[in-house]
Figure (cartoon, rainbow, N blue to C red):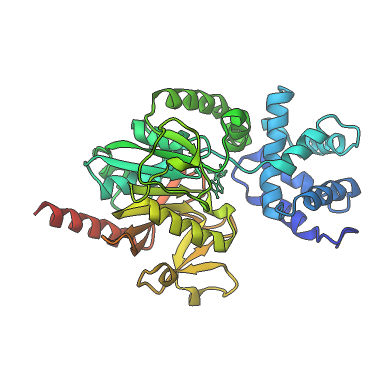
Length: 399
Ligand SMILES: C[S@@+](CC[C@H](N)C(=O)[O-])C[C@H]1O[C@@H](n2cnc3c(N)ncnc32)[C@H](O)[C@@H]1O
């Protein structure tokens, strides 16, 4: 059914119903979506969605379903000091939405404002286990410089640098990569963390984004880890849009919070985790090109996101993808975007290697994750060859 404004609302309700069935954030999150999914005829909810989408067309069904529970959590936890919502059943959410959709409700404008302005600024420490394993394999002991693009609060990359344990995952690889590489020392000697948003004054919002309702105890833990890592890490934060990087040969002011601090061809590894999925396809290509320019010849770009490597012909032609050949890599596969965040193993760790002339020359799909919370990992389609080639390279370098 198309609304009076001409916005097709069906996809929003379909999305609520899908998430009611498979959202990994626990019973209460699924109940919230179940309550929304049953309100397709509710004029007040239809108007609420329509109003948000008219003001911000960016809010497609997936984006709306992503932001709304986070906005609700932010309001309930930080403003109303409610600690009961992680236990809410569907009936509780029914009452909650009856109240919220009342035009005089006090929380409503605050939630609307978040929907109009904010983005999903999750910060998840566990995600950085993917780059950690890759870096241990590629650079087992020499000192390296790293750059993180789209870091949110810079928490994950600082945990990586400080060497804190990020390792509680179910490892489904045959050779148990997490155990095999656990003794390898990662030697990060410096780097930068960048995001297009400066989030230090929105730390509560980042925490509300990062924690599902069923894991609410982690909220305080995250805030404490952020304070600790910020104090102890040598990695500086620089505000920068990865689509508009102004790479310089020499930094002139180490502590300025501006975008002129990111160096050209300076990082052994440039990484981008769970940020490319927020960009349109043309911008994904541009971002990868910019990350390549920031990376040292012979270095690697690590992409961990809702993307895999596939032969395009095997899949529906409508699925957005970037042919590896368009990046200069002799490989018939494409970087393919997965749009269902919770089905299969849609979240993956890809590695793109640069040659000595700073051009991309190799791509591997190394790891697959159960979802972007990174609770369980298995081998990607190029896992074995990545392991073998990187062991061989090392032997060659050593001889
Ligand atoms: C979902 S968060 C992920 C944060 C962190 N990398 C992680 O995986 O936990 C995505 C971040 O990417 C940032 N981002 C999106 N587009 C960006 C761009 N063009 N340049 C820099 N950062 C961007 C957003 O501001 C947001 O903080």
